[in-house]
Image (cartoon, rainbow over all chains, first blue to last red; front, side, top):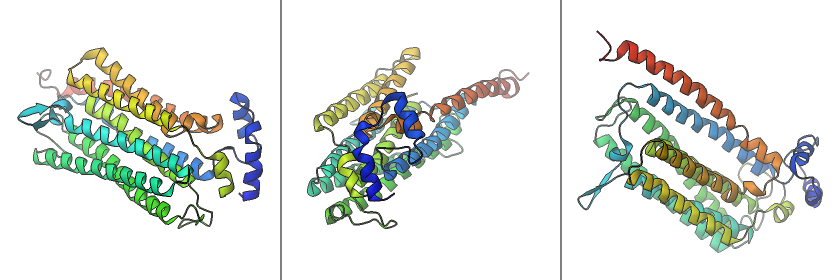
Length: 241
Length: 113
């Protein structure tokens, strides 16, 4: 879509119909359905929707094996307890990981805000803080995996009960951890671009001839918040249930 | 899409709102953790887990991901399809009950002879 068309579109964005009428109007308009979202953003959302289905399938698989097994399911509260100062605190590592990830979501939201304010330094710093918190999360997950593997958890069995516990645990947290890792890598890439002033100079990205701008920070943010969002569900269903 | 649109379409909102949501996410997470810490059991436990989970998810999607400022055409396109997952959950839960009963009848130590 050309700049000209896009500009013409936005000048009318305030007069677009709202509510159900707006939905019909947008979807039947014979040009593009997402009037006020750029294609970059719409495509990220569609990717996240497909990723939602992937994680849903994992969680449904987990539900299925847990509901069908005759053996007792290991008590997550005890399995993920840590002994600190001679006292066993249930789920403490998971709780800390949750807070780390939420903190990173907060700094990401701030980064997006500073990006639109064109504050290059603040945006870079906040993106780097977000990446650092993400890396911390992955580090803690690596620690958790190591601990469980030492205790004898395998994808085919564990010392406490239903063997499916291990396979679902490694599958779900592994896939989530991979997402966080990829997120950290891309946060560093976007941070570098912001620092260099790529988005001020509208420098195009690697695979596109379209001009870059600070909206790409927001789209990076969508991915990062999604990773946090998935963790909310994993935390509820895998660790607390 | 060129830069000319970003100023118009950019999602910039008061920082205070982000801080409030951030605070609530901490409070809700602490609430979720407390459920486990004080050993709540039964219906109270499951319902609180789900309520805290949905509130957290809602806040993240609506505010941090800016969904509440998007147009309905995008909101419906993204948020409605996941409801199909609920049907999948129902099917698998139904099937799982059946599998569990069958396994109980065929493999359980107590029931075999």
